[in-house]
Amino acid sequence: MTDLLAFTAELVDIPSVSHHEKIVTDHLEGMLRAVPWLEVDRVGENLVARTSGSGPRLLLGGHTDTVPPNGNERARVDGGVLWGLGSADMKGGVAVLAELARTVEQPAIPVTYVFYECEEVAAEFNGIERLFRERPDLLEADAAILAEPTGSLVEAGCQGTMRLVATFGGERAHTARAWLGRNAIHRLGNVLQRLSSYIPREVDIDGCHFKEGVQAVIVEGGVAHNVVPDRAVLTVNHRFAPDRTPEEAEAFARGLLAEADDVEVTDMAPPAAPGLDHPLLAGLLQRVGEPPTGKLGWTDVGRFAARGVPAANFGPGDPKLAHHAEERVGRGELERAYSVLRSLITEGVQEPA
Image 1 (cartoon, rainbow, N blue to C red):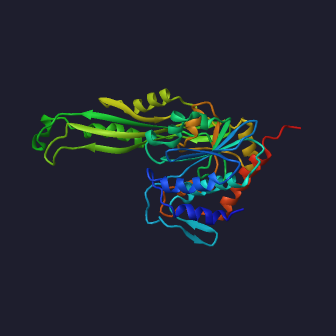
Image 2: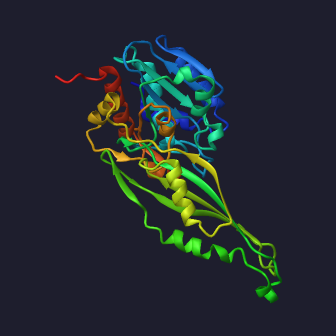
Image 3: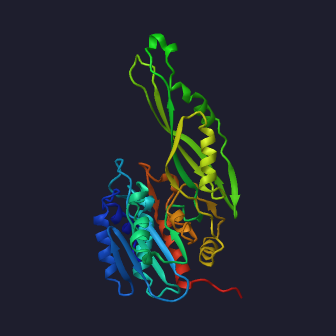
């Protein structure tokens, strides 16, 4: 087996900030097209490698893009730890999947490996979404595992995410005679108080714990230093558990923004239920040997679940270090993730005795 830490460092040293994944995709394509048991297709900067075979097909996916660098664009290895941009999120996971693709010649189940672009930016650019639009046949699978950083534990499903933009109107006046106007920014007071005092809703679904959230993330307003503002805009992000529909989550968030003159949902990604009753995902959980948790962030697991494909998150790296200047991944995490996934695809689903 290749030294996974060195392989991940090699990938970290190939810049691939979102929208600039061509070089790393070229690198992976050259590597995988040389593997005789893989059928390889490329759509833009999305690379799909598939094995043949019968039985339930497992899709293993990882995004190749990173967020912009923060003084950490070069790989640095210190003992058994690799530091660098994307080491955890998620070039460590990509290295594990690429190594599986080029070393497991005869998996017990058919496997599809997907390396895709633009996960870290707006949904309209997302590589998985592009493949579903243009080549859905390449993503056909019975279950999916995304190698997002989870500390090599199973983070099942994912929460939904919604962005709402609330507009508050007022009336301009000179600040020396403010009583002649209506301050739109002041109208945010009750809403901001309601948001800051919100106690997160918590729910357990199929043994997985989810904790919701709602946060004011952007405030815009003001005309001049001596003018009562006649307009203010508040952007809110709402994370909601899989037991709520997007419509229910929207109704809840609109209730928190009751004073607004207008509320528009500008972005929404649906949640995904854990789905761990699928034999392939149950097999993953069995091999990990630790209880699952609910994914508090949103991942592309939601895209698969929305199309009836149960999916989970499992990969090397601490998710709390994602996008952090001190992002890093350890050799042991990489090797554990590789070992678990290799066992799953080489042994397949074991029938009960």
